[in-house]
Length: 320
Ligand code: NAI
Image (cartoon, rainbow, N blue to C red):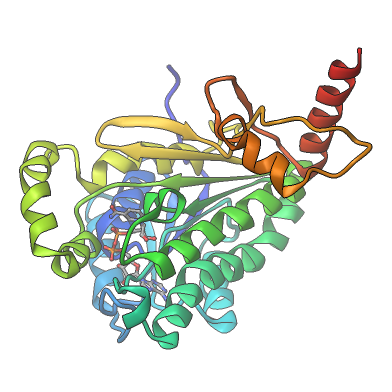
């Protein structure tokens, strides 16, 4: 296996002042990359700011002889995102990869959530990922090379009580990745998403807000998985997706206590009507089990047209 190197590469890692992001920054710097260690340095809910979190990680990298520069801007504003990219260009002359990792969390039942919570989560995760990609894109396009890593979440893609708002922001990130990966292909810009799992200050916050009974039930499981439920267990995947070694695009990967897997949006074979008359509510009610059935196989369309062509083939196969 050849070594995954970041020699002469410049990587922006957002939210790199702690948790999972810090590990990406340390690993990429250790592999020869120059890293923009971005972190707003605030609280886990996204409020407040400081310079200390990013500074500490930059210091760690410098101590080991690596290249890094701190950035304290918020990913959630146009100006902040542009400043973060400008920091990469001014300090190291280019930007090869962007890891959109910054995030906040505000666990809450729908009925207790506030519009401000929803706006804050969308601003950091979804707008932040969008603004960062938009700011980095022209540089990547010009050099005909780029890697963009989006951070989604099982809480968004699989669903989790108390996390409807956070989940919406994290699922929205998949929409960015889906579209930008299609646009980036011709310029050598590859976009993928990952779903990490780790104990961090973010998961501490989730535990704090969770139902006591639920926490008692999961405590023995957490104790068992603890050695692998750590930020560094996600590092290999983030580093790979940000590297030249990664030739994948438009994929979602899950990193979960030592298992890396592809996650995909699948479409069941479904129930096939005809192209002459629209399906009725009775057709759906009478065939819902078949519509839901994943055991007969499924497809993973790459685009809207890919899905249409697949269904057309089903119709044509049916007619022949
Ligand atoms: P963390 O709270 O340690 O890291 C997030 C970092 O983002 C913090 O250092 C924070 O200061 C920074 N940040 C927040 N708002 C920012 C902004 N506007 N601009 C720049 N930086 C900002 O949490 P963790 O667990 O390391 O999370 C990293 C990413 O992984 C997040 O996007 C999170 O949603 C995602 N994730 C984490 C999971 C886990 O199990 N820990 C599960 C699924 C997703």
